[in-house]
Image 1 (tube, one colour):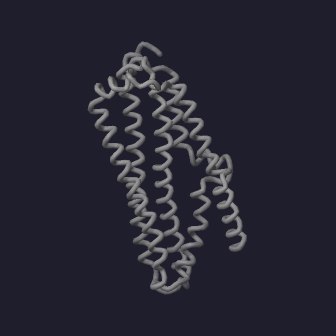
Image 2 (tube, rainbow, N blue to C red; image 1 turned 120 degrees about the horizontal axis):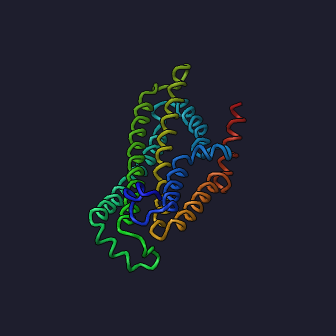
Image 3 (cartoon, rainbow, N blue to C red; image 1 turned 45 degrees about the horizontal axis):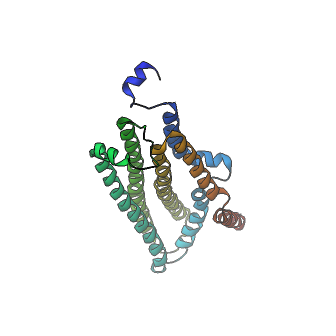
Length: 245
C-alpha cells in the first residue's frame, strides 16, 4: 500500500482484504448478469413465463373464483415480512456490536477461528461490512413488500369478468411483470445472507473469505443451473412455451 492509502486505511488492511471485499460485492451485485451469460438466466427470470400463464388463467376466471390466487400471493407477502423482521433483528444486533466494538473485539480474541493479528480498526471494518450487507438485505425485503402492494392493487383493478380485450391482457401481463420484480427483490435479499456468511470469514482472514465466497457462489450457481429443481423448472418452462407456441 502507498503511504497515502496507509494513512486512511485500517491498520493491517492489505490487497488480500481489498480483493476479498470486492469479490463479495462484485459476485453479489453481478450475480444475475453472470448467470445469464452462463445459461438460461435465473430461475426467477424463467418463472416469469409461468407467472404470465398464471395471470392468464387468473383472468380467465370470474372474480369470485380468484380467492386461491389471493391466498398464494398472501403467502408470498407473509414470507417477505418474516425475512424483513428477522433481518431487522440481526441488523439491530450488528449496530449494537458497532456501538460497542471495543468490547466485542476483546471478546473475540479468545475464539480459535479468528485472526488474532487483526487490528481493532480492521475488525471494525469487517463488522461494518456485515452491517452494510444486512442493511441492503433489509432494503430489498421492504422494497419487495412495496412491489407486492403494487401487485395487489394492479390485480384488484382487473375487470371482474373474463379478460376479453387486448387492453385487459396487457393489464394482466404488466401485473405479472411487477410480481416478478417483487420476487427479484426477495431473491436479492436472500442471496445477501449467503454473502454475509462469506463476509464472516473475513474474521478468519482474507484468503479464507475469498475461498468461502467462491464456494458459496458455486453453490448458488449449481442450484440455479444444475439442481433437480432447476432442471424441473427448465423442462416445465419449455413445455409451457411449446404449448403456447
